[in-house]
Length: 449
Ligand SMILES: [Zn+2]
Image (cartoon, rainbow, N blue to C red):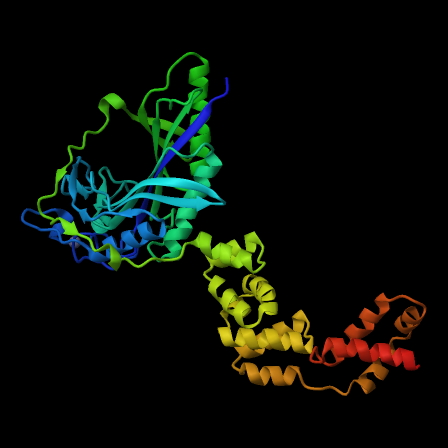
C-alpha cells in the first residue's frame, strides 16, 4: 500500500538577549560556572516576582513580522505545570491561548510552509549525571533563558522538506540576529509530529522529541515512516504516543503513551501583566530568501548566493554591483574563495577589482596585491606598484633568446606556445606587468621579425 507521510514541526530557539526572560540574570548558560547566573526568580523562591523581558518580545515580533505573521494585539502568560528537577518552580511560564504571533509563513524555493504560532516561554535548567556520582546535579544557569517556540501546520510530506525547513529557520534567526541557533549547544531543538495514512484523513500522530541535528530530523522522520507503515501493513495500529530519538541507536524509543501523557493544567500567570502591543513599533527585517533572490537577480548562481547570505557577505556584493556592475560576479566568487579578499574593506575591494580589470591582472597578481594590503600598505600604493609601466621590449628579447624551442613551436603554428612565453615575461616582471599588453607586444614582435 502507498502511504502519505505527514509531518508537523515544533522548533525551539533560545533568544540572544542580554538577560533572561523574567529576571535580570545574564543569559549566558554556556560560558559560566554552574549556578552563577541565578537569582530568586530563577529558583522560583516564594515571593520572587517575574519581570517581562521587553527585548525578547521585540525579537519575537521582529521574526513574526519578517514571516508575514499576525502580531497579537495583547499578550498574556500562562503557567504550564509539571514536575522535573530542572524546573525549580514546578511550572514553566509560557503562552497557551495567546501566542505573540499567529499564521506566519516561510517560503522555500517557491513552496510556502505555514506556521501556526510563534510564542515565548522560559527554558528549563539542565540536569547533569557525572560518572562516578550516585546522584545527579542540576545547573540552573539556563533556567529562565528566553525560548521561542514555532509550531508549523502538518505541512511536510517528506523528511528532506522538514530538514530543509529547519535549516531555513536557522538561517533566518541568524540573519535577523535573534539567535545563534547552534543545535549542538541546544540553542535550537526540533520535535516532529509524524503520521502516515492512505486517505486524506491524517493518521494517528506520534511525537518525536530530542532531535538534535539536521541529519537527525531527516533520519527520525524516515525511521518513523518505516515503523508506522510496517505496523499498518501487518494490520496493527499506530499508538498515539511520545517517543524520543536515540541518535546512537538511530531509532525512536517510546517515552509515554497518550494515556499517561502530561496534563499541564495551564492557568493564567498572576504575576505578569497583560501587555498591549503597538504593532507599528515593530520594525521589519529582510529574510534570507529575499536576500538570495536579490543576488540571483544580478546573475549570482543559487549555491553561491546561499553561501554569501549565510556568511552575511551578500550586501557587499550588491553594493559592488551598484558601483562596478562588471566586477560583481567576480566579487561574489572571491568573497567565498579568499578570506583575504573578504576581510578587506569595501572601498579597497572595489579599487582592487577595477585595477585588476583595467590593468589585466592575473589571479596571482591580485593575490599578491591583497597580501601587501594586509601587510599594511594602502590600496593606492599597491595598485600603483602593480600597475607600473614596464619597458617590455628588453624583457621580451631576453625571454625569446632563452626559449628558442617555444619560439619555434609558435612560429610553426602552435598557438599554445604563446601562453608559455607570456607566462615567462610575466614571471620576469614578478606578475606586475599588464598581461594583455605583454601578449600584444609579443604578437607584434613576431609579426615584425
Ligand atoms: Zn534570575
